[in-house]
Image 1 (spheres, rainbow, N blue to C red):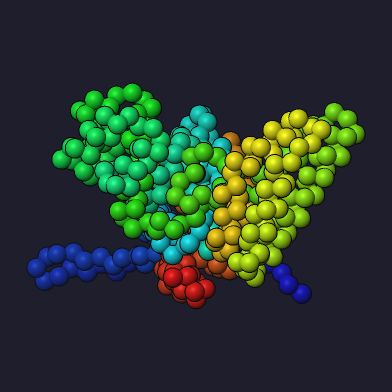
Image 2: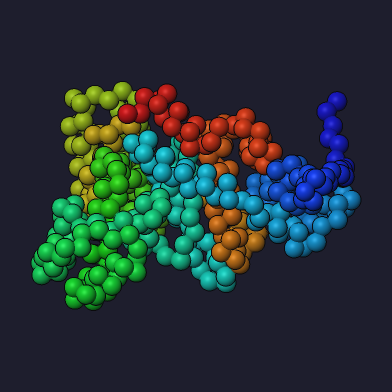
Length: 418
């Protein structure tokens, strides 16, 4: 018969004190895992697990521990959750660097994340090996490019930036001014803003395009692969590098349409059936890529998304999706990429639960802790590692579980990722 025994346990540490012949006093030290606090490693691991994994609020967590005979104040509960987390912060930061380095493809998504009583956003970046979150006040492309830098941003004026500026319609005079300047790289947002002002680039749109291009060029200069595929739900901020669209979100545009009569309902259902049949065949193509089948799949896509039905709004939606053919059919060139963003949707669901339970964070440290432990928890799950064992390993400093970025790299190598 399995059971669980929970009880408070106190340990008294007695530290020896010695006086040397020259009068100096020497005092013993507590184990480094206690970090100068009044609570043991098991209690700290339990508090972190309940709060970040089980979504137990701080008041309920304190009430539970008080009922078990532990004496903790509200401030001590907060200190258990937010204090001495520097090692976790560093591991989370390294996770994105390694994840982008070894991944041929990532999926992305974002959701709301309130902070200090204001609406904010939390982008998710990940794949089957890792998940990474970072709450911000913006969901712009500049913000996404900054997050992909995985550290201090680099603003670079290179040929890649020039190409982006041209594609986005930055005036020629502004492009020439940026490329003619002797300053070609900057590493802070404030310095980059001053640089743009000095060059006479003051309009909001021009500054935005110039900044996006410089950040993208900085990413490539720092080693981000030009072949990295980003799969999204169609949000514009994610449409950089090789961009693919989620088929589930694409079909949802048709599914949400409201037909007005029986014929329109029949047309809508017929189109949906055709899309899902094509989707199933694209999945089969992923499992066994056959270049000879690629042309036929493209022809079927063309036939589905250029057809005319009795439902005018449906026709407009099909036309809109047809314009994204290259993004929806990128899988024919890259069978290794997913056809959907279900992984990101699942990863970010924890934030939705958090938002419903707690509403949001109050301090910058609290927001950083939430992002960090959400990233580590989801990554542990993807790697098949017990989050409870992971927390105990890190807090007790036993070193049994290697750093998660190292495991991600090993799994990528084992999977044959170049």
